Amino acid sequence: MTRIACQGILFDLDGVLVDSTPAVARVWAAWAREHGLDPEETVRRAHGRPSIATIRELLPEADAEEEDAKVEHAEMEDMDGMVALPGAVELLSVLPEDRWGVVTSGTRTLATKRLHHAGLPVPKHFVTASDIRLGKPDPEPYLLGVENLEFAAADCVVVEDAPAGVRSGRAAGARVIAVRTTAKDEELKKAGANWIVDDLCAVSAVVHEDGLELTLNGGQELAPEIGAAERTDAQPDAVGEPQG
Image 1 (cartoon, rainbow, N blue to C red):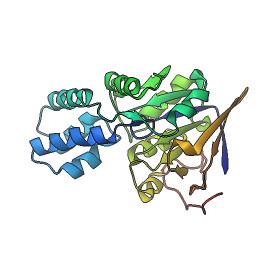
Image 2: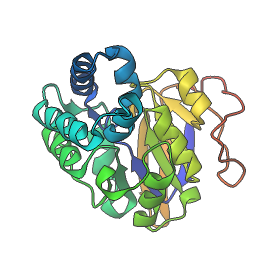
Image 3: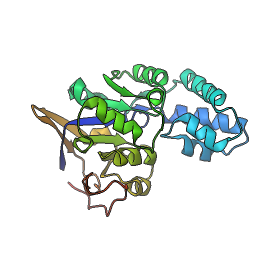
């Protein structure tokens, strides 16, 4: 069991709060086949990043804005299987609205629809692709997230599932809990995750007058906590033994 004191918590959306992975895979695989690209590799690159960044990387000669609009339209239409991931409803229900937010690589319109479809609240503090210039793994999304919460980055915890998001949170100066819903442990460790758990069922919260106390339960393997002031290159030293 590990306890983490913090002031605020920022969640990625897809793969952390909402199970959008099947829909994302369907949309990007279809887009890849349309353009003669490898579907599996395309889906891997697309996860956790703004769609337009993936398009520009894979099709540098294409009209990125036009292709991005096509991808978003397809994602807006595909809500099949969009549900809250385990532990999400329970954890959000105990957090005061001023102490949590969502930082996602999707647009505000798409993210809001996915939250509604999954039965989750739309946060007061919401950073989407519509609000930023540089997407994950750049620190800008989470820097804006902690600015919205009005807490220091070192006093905030980020919850992510994708290496790009882990790197973004660490580079912003926050501590990062990674969930095993999308990437392999080695990828999450290499990106700099401080702790790794299966999903949000392993995370509980107690609200105090002066902040939050998070508890990681369930005998999960935990990476050592690395102070934000000590390190922002997102490279962990080691992984501790499973804690009971």
